[in-house]
Length: 235
Ligand SMILES: CC(=O)N[C@H](C=O)[C@@H](O)[C@H](O)[C@H](O)COP(=O)(O)O
Image 1: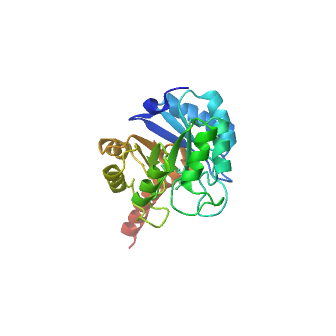
Image 2 (image 1 turned 135 degrees about the vertical axis):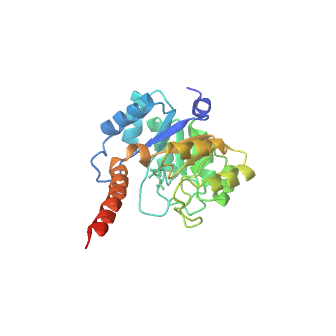
Image 3 (image 1 turned 60 degrees about the vertical axis):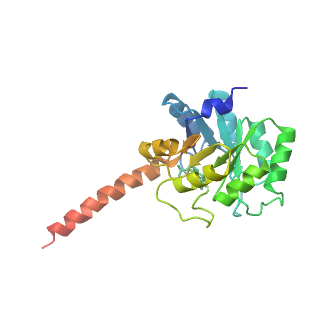
């Protein structure tokens, strides 16, 4: 097994996800995107869904953070032990799962989910956290990585425009586990700043792999100019 932790240290993880109903939601397409980001220097990828993970595991030689988003409860990222075991079996080197303190759909605690995963697999575990209290609880539960993935999405913290680097500082001040900064890293400068502030690795999704959102950013900026010009031209 590749030394997953060392290969990700200081690296860029690229999240390759398309959402339900989107044209790129297809394992072959996502695997091609994943191969492209690896060509560009990604140290690892984050893949959603068992088919994407299986396909990625065959085609890539970088660590895969696997998640399975399912259900319509609050907890959707690899919400139960069943999902986590399936993600590991599909070939993920790291199982990414909801690492918040919210109730999980199978009624298990994060700690018992982690313990069962340890008993049945040899994957590493990343907890997607939304606050410092989540990170402290996840560290106690025995995970390997803490992610800022859910900062701004659980009601415990404001949704910052860029990555929540204050949360990175707070977690680093209180926890000993490596922290992966994920969520709203939209520019290379933000990724570099996260690393400079002590992130173990940085995970970028939308800004690299979600063309419709990126396109909308360009449109919005251009529309502002067009609107301003119209206003100036008005008699
Ligand atoms: C909150 C949530 O459900 N985040 C998801 C987790 O897998 C993805 O939708 C994000 O794209 C991913 O975390 C990367 O973040 P960003 O796309 O902002 O770079």
